Length: 79
Image (cartoon, rainbow, N blue to C red; front, side, top):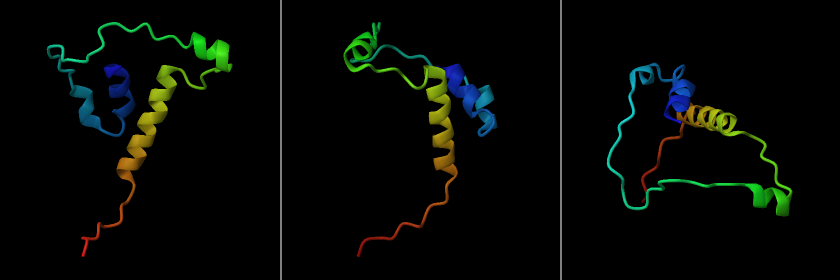
């Protein structure tokens, strides 16, 4: 996933090309193994994903970059 994010942001954030992931000790609540399966959603809800993981991540990164670049109105201090 790190490589996919790095590649997806490389044109917008050139410095990310040199970034390296930082690994740390496990934290409480970390998921060690996942057996995620959408089989039940497919069979009971007739769900079919529109995006695969890579396409979904690309779309999300494009949105985040666009939001980060969008002009913002100045914040008005409360009275």
